[in-house]
Image 1 (cartoon, rainbow over the protein chains, first blue to last red):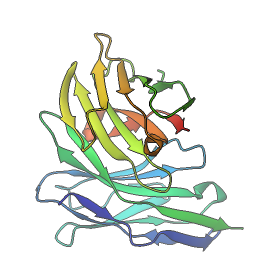
Image 2 (image 1 turned 90 degrees about the vertical axis):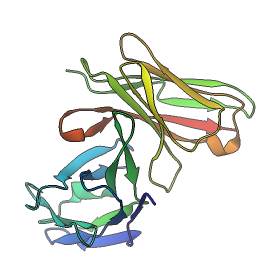
Image 3 (image 1 turned 90 degrees about the horizontal axis):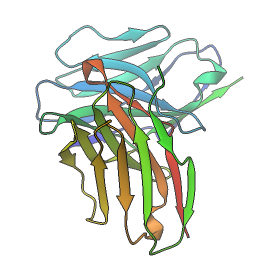
Length: 116
Length: 111
């Protein structure tokens, strides 16, 4: 089954603190890509971070980092030094191969609130 | 370079009507993917086109169709609109490392 589970529908954190969003997925593929996307109220889907499944090293992008556990099919996102602008829906997704192409399978999202 | 563009930004239709949504990928990119995002849910894959060929189709009825033009822009067509078709329709294009970048979306409301 091609599924992504984000078990936290909502999360809140104080500004400047750290928060971790969880994600698990189900795939039979050995090579794939994982993503976290951010969707603010404007609903534009913005790439936050990308992880290649064949790489053991966890990806980092400034204040954003992931904890990728391939065997457990877990892909959590850590946001350090939270800022008001981080408030948004966050979606976890992974690639599924098509005929010479790929599609994304998304989770249901986690709504992140930043408290000033 | 301009990113992925979509038109129109908003659209209101009535049940039974037809709608056409348009997308232009990042300049030089040959792939277009369409996703439907119902309020409160994650995006669901509808179609993938690459080099003007359909490469994949999600679990959507035949009322949904798409095509890609020689300039790699794309249209998504939905016939016989239902209330449940109300959603944000997202277009995306692939870049390096199998990453999809999304356009701003078209918000469709079916009354």
